[in-house]
Length: 298
Image (cartoon, rainbow, N blue to C red; front, side, top):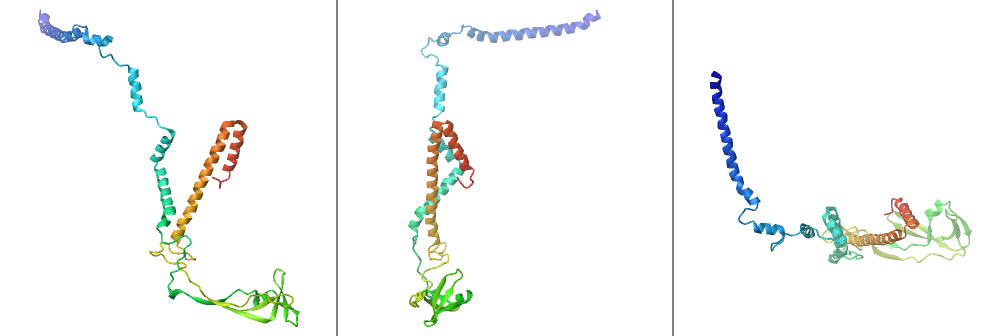
């Protein structure tokens, strides 16, 4: 009897749990019933859905393959090889830097001289009088200097009556000069004595003595940098900045001509090698390899 009293509360508790489970199951079935009825076609409006599923409606279901093709055509754009190369070129920063540099060089070399006051062969003759230096010089004589004769062992008498001497230079060549007539030439390093050259009969072979004044600086030689000459002038009085512009024209022109010629030759020989193939291809490629072995060749 004591055991039955102990088990009675446990049995009652288990019974209550069972009743609660049954109530929960009934409530769940009540909620699932409408959904099941709709799935089984018991809903009030199943016909349109069924008709649309069977293809009997006014708006049939579109084909999935056609939708994929249309969407792919809308997303993908066909680009020509030229546009593709241009797109890749303009996206490259290094390519853009090179392009901008070339544009600047072209503007500097071909457009810059149009705005400069100096021409390619135009000298700057605007030299202040205070820096001009005038010298009195003579023309170059067809003569032999006394120092030159002594340096080569002197000379020997050839005609005593006409006072003609024979002189042999360091190369073994023989010349004649008049010992009785001389002239001098003065320079910044001293005074030099010359003898008139002549033939074996005593006929002079020299030009007449002429003196004239010559301005050593008749142009702005090695001028300083100023507003008129941005990089100064060279020894000839030409503007250095302008000379750089005209020099750039030559360099750029040669560079582009070389590239164009290389491109044409590459297209020609590459086409021949690809068209004929075999030994023609091998021959052309071996010639190219030989040129590539020379470091200074492009």
